[in-house]
Length: 377
Image 1 (tube, rainbow, N blue to C red):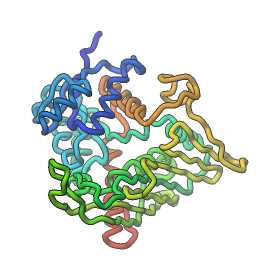
Image 2 (cartoon, one colour):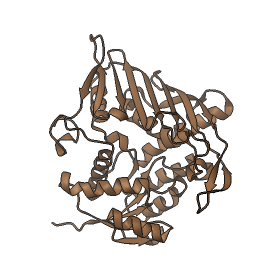
Image 3 (cartoon, rainbow, N blue to C red):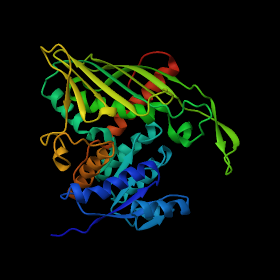
């Protein structure tokens, strides 16, 4: 039985839309068993910018009303700012339309809970877009940890450093507004690291149980430019520029996490390390085809190039040693999500996974406000 192509609707037309559209275009070439899709409707507010993006991204239609777009598509990607994650995603699920929503799931824990509950009530395929779960080296790391190669897990360390806000005159954007973003580096970057930690060691150490945290804003206001490039006004920055956290897992293992958008010299430095009683491993997004592994009995780490055909997803791409890049994580993510949609199956990371990360984000904020270690409630 031949299936009709899945009509894809996407809310948002900037950075994330470009990444996902690129992934959709690659699927037929490298993942021929992926369901056939049609890039149908691109949704946004600025009609001129929307039309330009639709032409470049390969979408046949545009819409300025997400409610109308949901009625026309089979799958809905919510790639808009955080404050528009909840309402459109819940509406799509209630209409029976599968949803992939960018992270963090919502600006607030309450909205994330509503999204999780809507997904559970409708039993429609849904997912939170934590694309770093789909790096082959990360999948290899999870397999090593699951096989017990590191022994009992004692410590997890993660950081995500960027420097795009080092300049105090860097322009204001929605990501700097608490009402729209929820948090700054904590939700924007920290959510990725916390999800990776759950993915890698959750089966071994349980959930996050208690946290201590510190959030810091270094620049309190930033300029908004006019059409001529001059400064029209300054707006308040109401989110953090950097965070750090210490966590305790249910097993008694510990973790330390940090992120910054003002770390000079770091463009997209996402690293995670796991230490056990028999070994350790380290991963860096800047060397995403490699995994550093210390095995029991060895004196130092070995660098493993994760490009063999037996490694996750690698057989779809190039011969061993021919590395892949950041954009490939979205291809893998889209393949898994759309395959789940086509089969009517669940997808991970789910909205429940997104909610669990949101619980930790909220606890870190609460710990910072109280100046003390708090339970993850």
